[in-house]
Length: 167
Image (cartoon, rainbow, N blue to C red; front, side):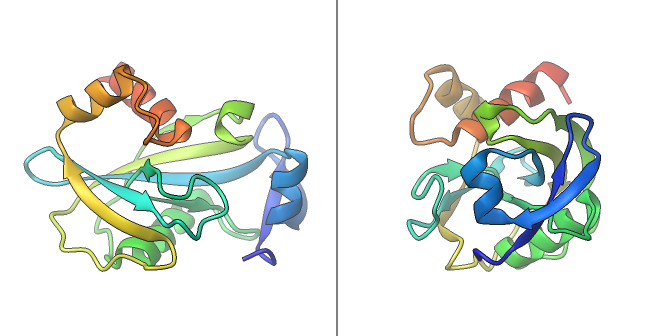
């Protein structure tokens, strides 16, 4: 994956360059990502436990599916690709919720967050995900309030924003 090419963007999320992923991460350039919150019909959220093979946040719990926007892609196409690659499902409808600005706390990524409803089952990508489970909204909110270190910082940021929107 070190050959993965990503768009470098400016402070207004306009593309200004294309660079390899590892360069972008090593020098902290702004780039794009998507995160998808997959809820079931009971209102529970599916979280993935990131593979220990991952170079960032291995073994931590994260959003249902996520990934970088590759050079030449847009947010919507990436979200569809990531949910298929990581969870093995086709999302019938992905609802765009909000976009977070690129900050150091979330890896200099502009993050477009989506929501969808799916009850599973999922076919988890073994190189990406070690485990996954459903969690109630109250349980997630409690874990985030307690600053649970088993959750990624990015997921905590996304969830806090999600809660403020009451959507």
